[in-house]
Amino acid sequence: MRLSVVGCGYVGLVTGACLAEAGHEVICTDIDAGRIAQLRAGQVPIYEEHLDRILASAGKAGSISYTADAGEAIRFGDAIFICVGTPPRSDGSADLSAIDHVAQQIAAEARSPKLVVEKSTVPARTGLELQRALSAYSRGNGGFRVASNPEFLREGTAVEDFFHPDRIVVGVEDLAAAEQLREIYRPILERRFECPVHKTCPDSQRAEFLVTTISSAEIIKHASNSFLALKISYANALSDLCEKLGANVEEVTHAMGLDPRIGTQFLRAGLGFGGFCFPKDIQAFISLASTVGVDFEILKAAERVNKQRIDRFLEKISKALWVVKGKRLAVLGLAFKANTDDIRFAPALEVVRRLLEEGAEVHACDPEALEKAKKQFPQASFHQDPYEAFEGAHAALVCTEWSVYKNLDWERAGRVMARKLVIDGRNLYSPAKMKQLGFEYVSFGRE
Ligand code: UGA
Image 1 (cartoon, rainbow, N blue to C red):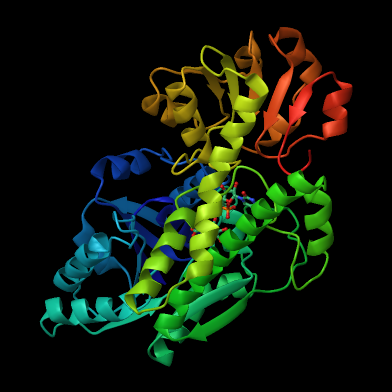
Image 2 (image 1 turned 90 degrees about the vertical axis):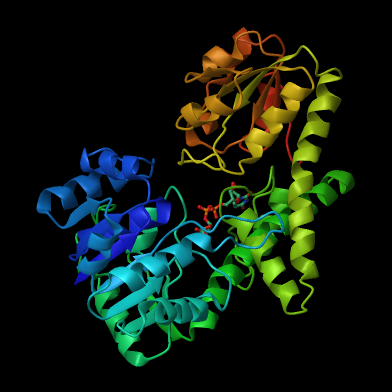
């Protein structure tokens, strides 16, 4: 099928690339002409595992192309995926102006009936507004059907998640739209693709194809992200309690998680959640609920617990160092989580900002996010190699759970540090092992 993707951010690029790899003809467009020029030149503007390879192979096969001309992209596809940003406004609600803009472009440029699919994360009822905008601006020449098809991709494993989803949700107003979307996802549903991730794909369950109303699909996305955020905050509140009562949060969450009704995932205590999804989605969900008179108190608490994680971390740092001013600190990890270069709402950035404010000398490292972080903190020093950051450091602070940091040679690090102190915001190491290596070691919920 011929498909158009509007917006070449994380969601748009992964969606476009994977749909092309699955056998469709895809054209991508973006308001940022520089980004389109980069893509045309074979460069990938974001770091996402496997994406460069898929874009290269789809480009070579001629199944993906890029244009800065939105009209050309809109006329090309039978279905148009809207993947533009919906950033938070100052009151927490989602800014939908980019979606409105695309709706006007589609209405003006389309010359044949289109299935318009909203893939950006949007509050409930956006689909209905989108439908209204399309008919209002098209002056009757449209023939548009609207669907909501939320994505559940995690940054860092987005390509794998795309090819091996646990569910594909399509919110539609009529069954023809559902059938068109089933056709688009048929290669994924029937596993008829060459997997770019595995040699032999894991024998996991096949994805469920769920057809819902548009509003339900929109809420499913917000409800899923908010629930995961809630789980993380629950684990973090537990971790504070475990510290006070002398228990070990990992023993507790592991045992809890073995109950299949709870599950072991997203119960890792530490510095809390960041990124461009959870913090903004939870806020948007709270804000959406309040507009219809529902006080989503439980989510407000989850948000509050998460914000306090940074305070807890800074308290641990102050307690261990006594005076923070003038201390040389090695910060391990800047990205909001491992395997991404994304630093948006990364807990590490807030940690660095506060340490600099207190007069510490920050030496930060990250395998992928250095370039982005450098622009924000001209006063800090940046190193690709963590062992450079350890030179003369009074403490090492773990902020992101990169596997290279999990496997550091602490004996080597200890030889060059001024003080053998590790304050671990991601519980990467065994306290007993660190003690054995002669380190003072502070982590979350395991004191
Ligand atoms: C999240 C969801 O997991 C995806 O399903 C969703 O599609 C995506 O948002 C989105 O809305 O686009 P993502 O933001 O990429 O994906 O990251 P996650 O892997 O979910 O992690 C989010 C944050 O939670 C990270 O900062 C991570 O370090 C933190 N986290 C995660 C914890 O602190 N503890 C945990 O146990 C798990």
